[in-house]
Image (tube, rainbow, N blue to C red):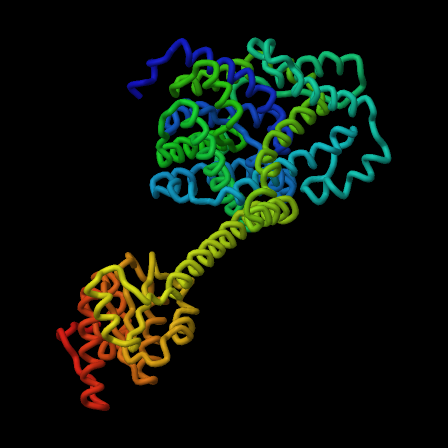
Length: 547
């Protein structure tokens, strides 16, 4: 808090500019959620103020965002418009985020692979656009992506050309507004004002009466029949809001050359969403475009986000009557721009030059986001990405295992290997040995062991960790070695690896353990010599320890 007034002039400028930019988006996203324009405003005020006050990214501007609105719109349709249950979900989402912050979940959210993030963000952009097509054509489509898509033929059969022209004109103005004028009047706000003025001469649907003044208190309500639906939606809102906010925090870090506190940011977002639900606002998160506008306008500290919220509060208290004349088509045009901006065009343009699997994963997540649901899309994407990563690491581990050395780097080790006359097979592991490679480990050892080998040496010198699956695979190798009359040795194993092997009793009496490869080779040569001099007998040199 000591830096609250460190950059007052820049924060005031940035906050006011961000507030002006946020105004049309808050109204449009409130309408898109189904709860109404004022819910968008109250959400922008509550999340914007408290996330700035308690969050961990000083320059971040928070408020309603596309991903959150998509979930709320689906919940609105599922609950038949019961706003009290929707506000309950927003409160619960905020509480979930506070818990996430205290548990440090933000550190794990950053591990979500980029193709998954790209896919579900692009899917959300596509959903926003799909939901606005009917409104651009002069109709109010049914809720849900599938419903909106199936309604398009009906809307095309009865197009309101005045509404379509107004919506497309708004979209053009928002995109083509001159940057020189944008310094004084942001493109989205200019499109809102111009579109509303033009609509006065047309017969198009408008927002209508909007309540003014301070919001009322909405305490959480629970109904047995809808409890799990509300809790599930709250959890999805919390996860999406966390991802959305922390991605925006990374953008802010790059622009300000600072580092955000992810746990503190989630706590701030959680407090903001909890308050938003209590005063009848929709859920929000860190908003990338508004944050960029704030930083470029001079905002650096948390005061800028608080001022942005106070600007919106002033609008609610004094100017809400003017907002009642805003046409649905104008807000639809602004939302189409929001959707187009969310879609990850930059990755799509370059995806064909990268790994095909990553592009396929992105498309899969995009499709699941649009046609199934967000939590399924992210869950499937993360699981598949993790499995693909495990497979890649397993392949590297197996390839390393296949390299049976004919020559060693150390001259003493190399001399002992030559003295063994091809009767020692060394398998060297590289990197963490995990379950991914465990299934094939025994097979590859059997396949690549030298036919005349009397001793197998598993070198764990470069293995920092090993899981239970890999340890069980070592037990399989031990059984194979015993069955074929070969002695198995392990060298270079750390105390942690020995502990794993001992905990699951990996044939402890059958494995000879040595600290180094040199000592293992010395013992192997002694065993071979002893066996040659005394057929059927295995000698043991250097008295090893046992697993």
